[in-house]
Amino acid sequence: MRRFGEFLFVRHRHNWLLLLRFALVGASGVLVNLLTLVLVKRLGPPTEDPLFGLPLTEFNVRWYHVYSTVAFVVANLWNFQLNRTYTFRSARHAGWWREYGPFFAVGLAGQFVGLLLLTALMHRGSPLSLPTGILDGSTGLRTRLYWAQLIVIAVVTPVSFVLNKVWTFAAVRAHHPDLADPSHTDEVLAEAGVPAHDPAPTSAAPAPVRRNRAR
Image 1 (cartoon, rainbow, N blue to C red):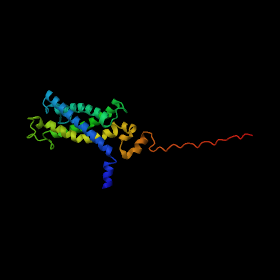
Image 2: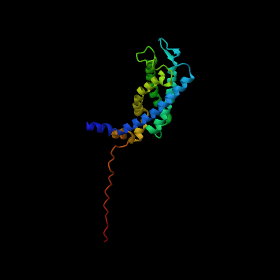
Image 3: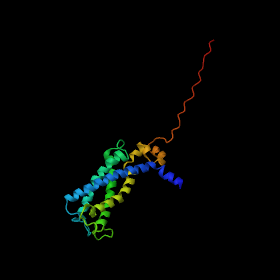
Image 4: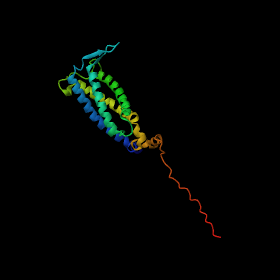
């Protein structure tokens, strides 16, 4: 048990630090996400009004799908910039667009899953539908969309962390081995083309000096 604790908390302490930073950035991103959601909700049509129907189905894209997606895009940009400069510190080792492409792709995949979950939480005929009695929309704290969005963020964030660590910000593993998992330092150094343990340089023995004897 002691060895397991050492393996989990000592050898992987840097991963825990990265997760803490990611969580702090994510917490700020949640605020940005919700503030954006509140703003677009107030400016737009009622959340559950249909926007257009999905072909060959009985389902509709509703305004809350649009509001959630707009909030995602704004928070995604916010989180990316903070993760790039603070969490993974990869700004000096990869171009902005080169990293934002994978980051946005990861976020977009998460948003797609999140929209499915959001629909299940908001659709009144769904077994996962949030109750309309307590969450009747009379105040901000009793608005179903806000709580549904929070649940979506809580579900999607852990998966996003793992994917962004191993894919989006992978440049830091090659350029900064100290930011990698300490238990895989040798592999990281090998990936960067640096020998894990450079042998100490050996100096060549000095050539013997011949002295000519005076005759």
